Image (cartoon, rainbow, N blue to C red):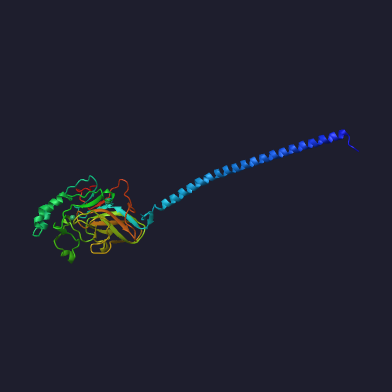
Length: 351
Ligand SMILES: [Ca+2]
Ligand SMILES: [Ca+2]
């Protein structure tokens, strides 16, 4: 039986509504999908931003870590006490170095010799030398005719040819004055302390003197005016001692000792004539000191000849290249002056 027209019309309307509804649903779904995609993209972007933001600290951290590594690396070049920086690395321990002019104590012993620090603009100190005492010593010797010259050299106190301190380490050095013997032919007044050995006694062209004030040659370790440094040792044992001096004739060697103990291992280190470090004793072998316990010690240098210019010292173990800034010495407290022993009140330390 055919459907009535009204029923057909009704179904047609329902069908169209269904279609429209489907379209609507499809559209909604599509819109939702688009939004979802857009959201996804946004999420991806957002995540990208978040990742980037999160990455920034990492980048900074990375930089910071790098810096830390760099600073650690740099820190590794900051050596411990008694260590030396050699080719950017710490060597040692047990490496001590000091400028000769930065002494902590001086012991004149004879009340006459002065340790005079030479810097740019240094002036020459004056001496009142005992001409009569020189006359007594020179009388009836091959040097008798040198009396006036000896006295004059003593009065002038220092070499006429002051060596320019500029090229020396720290721009300064310390010199033992007066410098009465400046050339090989000048009178040598030898003081040996408790007495010269037979070899010293027979040394050609010298006069043995008992009066240390007149001496200009101190061949025996421990008998000469002394200059000392306070050094904090972090290790013990045998150390090599090397010195740098100022080029000069007849004034070029030094003794070394520790804590008022002097022995043959520190007797007479001769400076290199053309500069540079030297650790060789005049009699041969290496200059050494023996540190028996850690902590502060007195390191002494005694000038073997008058007029010796002393620039720098180093005490070290092993195969360490001796060079660099001061290290391991205990600085003088601010405003504190070096200890001075056995100095006549009329004499001054001239810095
Ligand atoms: Ca001399
Ligand atoms: Ca120096």
